[in-house]
Image (cartoon, rainbow, N blue to C red; front, top):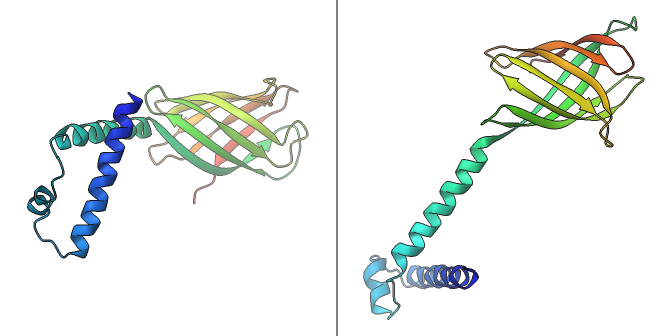
Length: 169
């Protein structure tokens, strides 16, 4: 397989070099010019198909994972103060709705950063926040509107409860 990949790569590189030469020579009919250069293009269809297959694989994988960055506010019921900011970076798997990512929370006595795991399920979202060693710090649940606005509630491992929401941009 590696030999096949290497020879295919060399062939593509050779074609690219030949195309550059053709461009320098102001060639208008590249196929005819290439045939006159005594270069075998019999593997051309095989290489084109391999490239198409690889492009399709990459596109399929990219379509499954969607990155999201949000900022918002959280409000504790325990502490009588204004809503505090938070920032989140998520990756959503479109196949099964799972989300993973990181959150930065300002003003929390329990944690300032955490790892998010959860799931989008239709118009709802739920999950939990852990520290780097895997200890659960909080759980959350909420709703997602058709315009992707999100809001909900949380409970921390020390018993604090409150609400959260995504700021509209």
